[in-house]
Length: 330
Image (cartoon, rainbow, N blue to C red; front, side, top):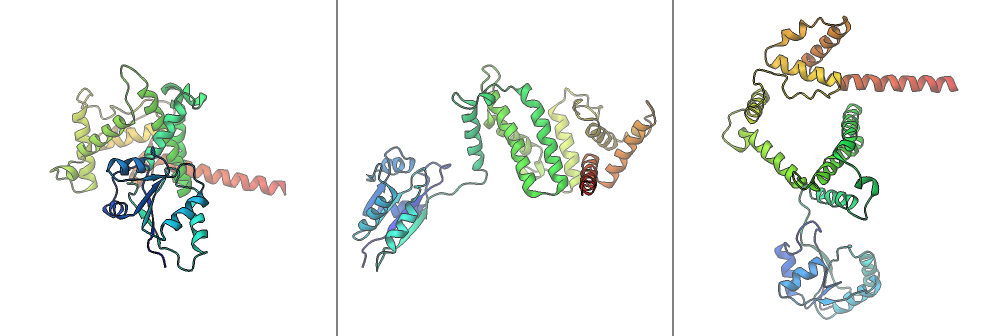
């Protein structure tokens, strides 16, 4: 019979190694033997800084390490401090060793810390930093805000396309591409000396804006319906930028928006401001322009995004054209 057990302590690489659960620390403190790969491993470093002894097993292959853990567990409780590379092959090697024993020691994976929601964003930031840093990707290294701008527009439209397709996997991928653009621009900005900022500044400003514009959630605001929330949002936004003409409902609409998206914004802004008659009175140019504006008005009344509706129709047209080409080739 075995006198001890094997505990495999693992932690999230995105959480400081010392911030472990009470159970994990208790398991380490009560063990007769604590083993770790290398003194520079974050978990080993945290345990030794806490005044506990860790025996190092540098450059020991997984099968040999498994045999050592099993042998040590014959006499006492032993703990292995998981390495940053997740110790490839160790669990399989342990399973092989344990199956040879009539009375194998109990083995438990002790999770010392878990990823918080959004933790993988840290990985994305780290990858972007690597790509942009010396020794990274030459193409990434030469990009500027101006050279990246077309990609941001393109990726945004691909998100809209994925939404229209109702394809969850495609949408997940395209949102990742938009996130890449945000990370990329923030990384480029962080390299500027005089007016630079980084991804934390971007996130911090976003948090401040969301809290400020949701007083009904984070303060004593009284908005309770979507319409009241929207009105409060518009008021707070106007207060934030007093330099804009408060009487101009079109202030702040980017002139670089594609015409259909710009028309949608104009119709929405003017209608909310009580100037919907201005849209109906448009007569300049040929009759087609006002007719298209009228379609945008109808789409708003129906609660339909005209860009998405048009994209869906084009996708249907593309499918029909493809089917016709297929029929013609058979």
